[in-house]
Image 1 (cartoon, helix red, strand yellow):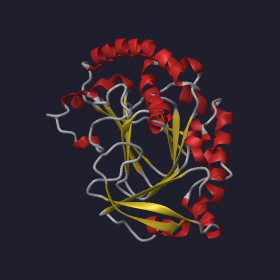
Image 2 (cartoon, one colour):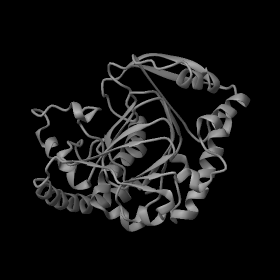
Image 3 (cartoon, one colour):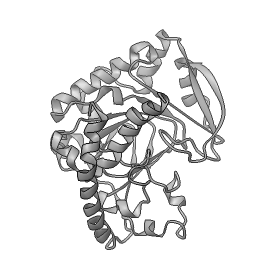
Length: 318
């Protein structure tokens, strides 16, 4: 939306729809059993990617990257080759694992120990060659312009291949190469767009919930900056039943995303991801059809964008 007033015109409509749907979801959620289910899996040989994404159900696809045959990808071997030709240094934040580092938002109690300047060669050596450091958590995301443009080459090649298959344009600038140590956690949140997470090295624990369970997941207030993020602890299984009693009603879908596998994340499905070992992954999100912006659940990410693009800038001008 190019102007803040355009968003303001939609607020009454979206808020009314959101209120009606929230009541509906709360009625549905009272039937939740707190069951634990395995995430569905399938082989890339048996999957039509566009069809799977249209069903709006999460699924782990085995061997998808190999089947697609990307010319460039962010596996450890490829990144080591990049490291041999690019010695530019970048900052790496190292956190104390007593309160793990959580990506993107909020204060989940993370404790920054120090920051180091590293080349990609030294960073990969620290992450994958020197053994596990259980007392620390390290995480670094490389955007398209980083690694002297090498990250962009990988992201653009993967995105162009995907666009031909799913008939949606991947948002390249929202992608990146994510490298993290064991214990790095992305806390419970949802996205308004469909996404694919390619796991190229190491493994991650994935926890997901149906949109119908959103009332049981203690999300931030509707118009808050981080409205699409949960108030549950970063590792949601640590939530106390006294403080978060409705959480026990939520039905969880669990799975392990291994190297070479891809997770499809449908819009509005809350998810939490934790690295089980040093790992590398590449996420992609895809644009929405215009009608999808009228989904009442889009109000939360729309507010987040509005805060970030307009209100923050407005306050800085005062």
